[in-house]
Image (cartoon, rainbow, N blue to C red):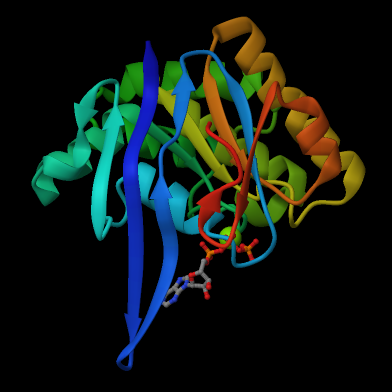
Length: 225
Ligand SMILES: Nc1ncnc2c1ncn2[C@@H]1O[C@H](COP(=O)(O)OP(=O)(O)OP(=O)(O)O)[C@@H](O)[C@H]1O
Ligand SMILES: [Mg+2]
């Protein structure tokens, strides 16, 4: 059973009459419980692919299936509901809300989903503990280190029980030890809770810790994935 599958995915960016083929016929499958890295030179299409499979952008042609549901056939509204329910995002720049505490940052997405305040708080405390941040729940992002902020972002991504977590260069802004701790935390979530991860990265340490590597070059996969 695949939690993520694409068919003939292409993306053509149009800029001032110039057409940039960012993705070419990408067919990719990720099974439930996998921990996969997506690697390739700068400009090879990693971010474009993650944005399409996460429903943040639409392909020029081709299909994206999340849990066997075709998200490319959905309306804007259906796609945003699907994103909230099924996808967790971790970005290079953490993207936390500065005026909210760590716990409130994690609660926020659950409140959007209609989960009650009490339940959201309980889950937020639990997921922050799962990424090793117990005791730091009430700190705001600027009172946390970069690695701690990124772990808040991971806690936020998993709090809603997504089918898959997509992470775009999650260790790019972290020193190597902090990056190592972050990847350990994600590996534990994968091992113990079976959460599926797809991580784009240039970081050999991240690549070594994943169970499968998907390689891209010039908008295409190097081999069937
Ligand atoms: N909004 C956009 N408009 C036009 N071209 C774009 C846009 N976003 C990306 N591109 C182009 O699409 C190609 C793929 O870019 P993408 O950001 O997906 O690469 P990447 O593999 O994530 O690179 P990096 O490792 O540097 O993050 C590049 O040629 C890039 O210049
Ligand atoms: Mg990128």
